[in-house]
Length: 246
Length: 245
Image (tube, rainbow over all chains, first blue to last red; front, side, top):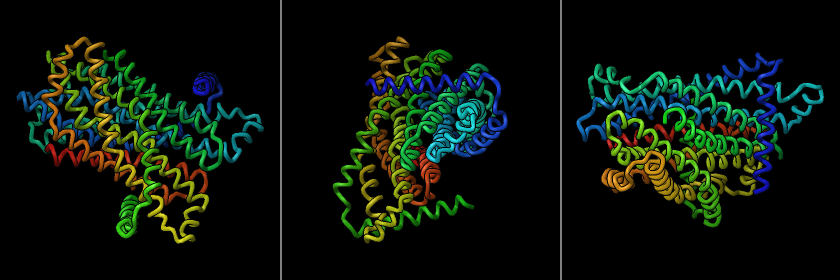
């Protein structure tokens, strides 16, 4: 128990150091843009590959529910609310945690194992400012971008299922798509994913930064990163949903 | 192009495994150890995630149905979305993140340390020794984990619906009960088995073909979880389409 508390405290101190370096100059712009670009590109296909089938499934099951009441025209609003508020932010972040978070843990972990981080410190380069802060900031930018892509792919999945597969009229679908959705749903999703991006970045960099024990240690850091990041943002998600949409 | 090569490699991998699996007895003790590791050690993660999936399901169901004046339907929404789709799928994603990455990183570390070559030198088939126990173990525990996830999700939704949103408890349960059938549960179990096979083969395959060194291990682990998630979601759609479509 004390061990767990000590680790949480250690993580808190690390997160504080990163946060301070993210808001004070000098910034490592170059790495920030490079990381943000790489993450967005590498996660683009996975995010689409996950949200699109999910949109299909919501369409399928939603039609099954609304067919009972003869209320098929409500389907598009269910899809847009579910995708914009919940599914796309969560699924995009799961994928970012799995793809980008784990690769950050692996990169920093292997830099730690090969003593590259120690070398930077010895050269009087602040390794948190130089290596960690741009990565966390990059995820905070990339997550909302990928969330937007996920929104579009999820809606496209719902449209494909309802209109192309099940033959619902396209005009009715599009007309009802925005009935119960407000701009605040989209903005809420963006706020959520920015916070999730910060959580994923902090947890991933923490595990990589303090990795020990050779190749196996890197593997363990990657493993812990994905699980703990997902746990944390699922929990935070509940509170954010209550606060933003409740 | 490289994606096609990857799928082909995975198929060869599965075929190589199949050839040794049908001709030899599985290593029973090892299977139990793996079942403990995958099943029991993933449980805390799975329970926590399922609780929060349930709470959010109730919140969003409520938000979606209030404009229609259908608060009573939240129970039905939770039962259909949670039992049929979300709980099994989120359970699979978490098992992929927890147990799948563990498989990938263990095997990748063995590859790095040349322990897999050592196995072959000792005339132990690495597919038989490393993949078989993991596959049988995950097949054994996955349906149970999926059921637990379903149960916890619905319980958490009930708590949020009744205590946070102030809905009527018995109505919630009545709607949840009437809209869930045995078929939904069995479909969930079938999905769990499909996800188990996907997670195990993809993770082990990523581990086997990892490059040596710490970066290789990290990359293999990374690939394992991303690809298993994508394949699970895609196959989830296929199974739903075939069974509910």
